Structures are given as structure tokens and as C-alpha cells.
Image 1 (tube, rainbow, N blue to C red):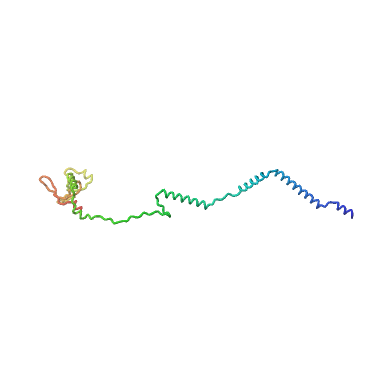
Image 2: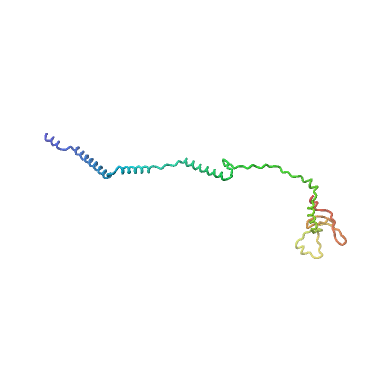
Length: 214
């Protein structure tokens, strides 16, 4: 029994054997990290370290979002510029700007009834002046054509071509009916045919123009 105890004491504990490599591994890892730190962090001065830290701070500042402009202030600036433009236009022009976009209305002229002088009495007692008399005297010497129309009728071209000497054309006026007297082809008088020595003449019995005016 004593020998078995001795053998057991001499044999290492498996748990201790397992923990030992762990400690060795931890030691090796710590040693490796220190070596890496020595490789990454060489000997630097304080000024160099401060410069590196400032550069890192600048990178952090650049990564931040830019400031968003204030839309309300931008709208106010635009409105101010529009107001200044309108004021300059008003100052340089004579146009009357009214608020609300209303167009100024012009004052309507007052209507008054028209009055005309009464010319009915003056027309009755009108006497031509000397200048008017002179102009009328100039018209007195103008010659006009007087025609006595015994009667009228209508014929076709065939009837006209068939007329021969000795043919009789019947007119639309009866015997004893007044004949028509025209001045420049315009009917002015009516009268009767008379014989003056060896010539025909007309006795005026009616003035057509005056009847038309009445």
C-alpha cells in the first residue's frame, strides 16, 4: 500500500499538466503582443505623437456631416431681394402700383345731353349771301340736254332686226296724255306737244321734281 501511494505521488496530476500549457500559451501570447507593440510603436517623440493625434482628430471632424442650410433664412433673403427689385422699378417708372394686383380704374366722363340750335325758323328766312350768289351765277351758263319722251316700248332683238321702213312701233302712251320732259336724262317736267309755226314745242303743265320733294 505504501508503494502504491508513492507511485501516485510521483505521477503528475493530469489537471496540472493541462493547466501548464495554458499558462505557457498565455505567456507566449503576452510576449507576442509586446513584440508586436514594439514593432508597431517604434520610438517616437512627444511632438510626433501630438501631430499624429491631431491628424486623427481632423479625420474625425471630416467624417462628420456638413451643416444643413436654414431654408427659412434663405426664403427671407429671397423675399428681401424681390422687395428691393420692386422698389427700384417703382422708383424708375411712373406706373401706379396698387396693392392686391388691382388695376386702377379711370374716372368715367360725365355724359351730358347734346343741345342743337333750332334752325327751323332760320331756314325759312334764309337769304343767300353775295358769295353764294356769285357761285350760283357761275352755274347759270352750264348747258343741259332737254329731251321730250313721247312714249316707250320694249322689243326683242329679233323684232328690231325685222323692222323695215314703213313699220309702225306702238308706244305705251295714249293720245292726249302728257309727255315726259327730262333734263340730262332725269324726268323734271310733264307737258303737252304743240306746234309753233313749223316746229313742235312743249307746253309745261307739271313740275315733277317739286312733286317728288313734297
